[in-house]
Image 1 (cartoon, rainbow, N blue to C red):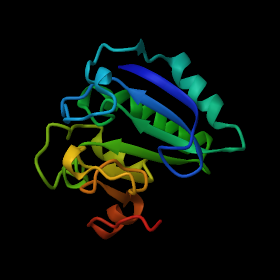
Image 2 (image 1 turned 90 degrees about the horizontal axis):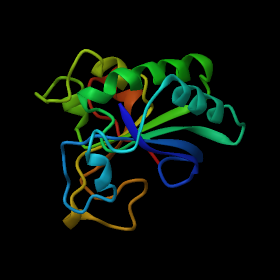
Image 3 (image 1 turned 45 degrees about the vertical axis):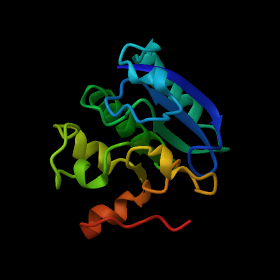
Length: 174
């Protein structure tokens, strides 16, 4: 897996100050995407154990609320194995930090309820380690600057733990 950037004090991609990892690789190719260069799976730098250690170290700061995963597309099959390892570490070593993930895939696709190219051996575990999922492809015609933590009105802010428990989408109350 490659990544394009690690933002060390991000306030745009989730509640509070966050560490944001922008992974490389995306097959959605949304019209108007703000991060087109990350569509290429080879863009950026190789994600290594040192990269993972750096993210964990950055997350230890008291003022950091959590980790946000963006892209590219975190739920591309090629990205899931490395991200599951990172998320396991976050939940084990830093259980008070929350995890947000931005995905063009729908929650129903990631749960296996709807067929998807994103559903694989790591998908359910990865989903279970995320607290908030912003799902759905970006749709340029549905863009609004008034939306909290999402780019287009079709995208949902999902409370993943509650949704998995209820067996249906539970939207995050902000």
